[in-house]
Image (spheres, helix red, strand yellow):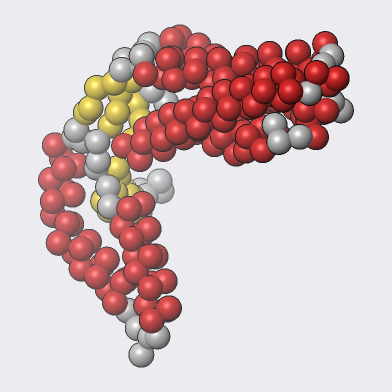
Length: 220
C-alpha cells in the first residue's frame, strides 16, 4: 500500500498528466513507408487565433523582444553602479524586480516559439507570464523609484548625477513594463474549435482516457 506522501505525489502527477494531455487524442495514420499504421496524437482543444497578420505578429515579437533586451540592460546598469542607494533599503524592491523580469522573459520566449494560432495552453501560458510578470515588475519598479526618492531626500550627502540617473532608470523600467500591458491588452483573438472529425475522435476516446487518468492516479 502507498503511504500518504506517495499517494499525494501520485495525485499531483495525475493532475499534471491530465492537464497536459487532456486535449490530445490518439489517431491512426499511415506510416511513412506505407506499411502499417502508427499512432499520432492530434490536438482537439480550442485554438486561440490572434487577430494579427503575419507581418503584424512578427512586429509584435520584435517589439516584445526589444523591450525585454532594453529592460534587462537598463536593470543590469542600475545594479552595477556603486552608489549609496544601491547599498540601502532601496535594493529590497529593486532586487525583487529580477524575478518579474525573468517571468516576462519566459512569456516572451513562449511567444517567440508560437504561431499566431495558439493552442489553449500556449495562449494561457503566454498571457499569464506577460500580464503577471509585467504587472508585478511595474509595481516593484515604481516602489523602487519612490523609495529611492525618499532615500535621496533624507540622505542629501548621497546626491549625485548617477543617483539621479538611477532613479530615472527605475521609472523607465516601470514604463517599459507598462508598455507590455498596453500592447498585449490590445491584441484580440478569436476562439476556434477543433475540426469536426477530430472532435468526433475526442468524444470516442473520452471515456477510455478518463479511465486511464483514474488508473494513473490510483495505481499502487
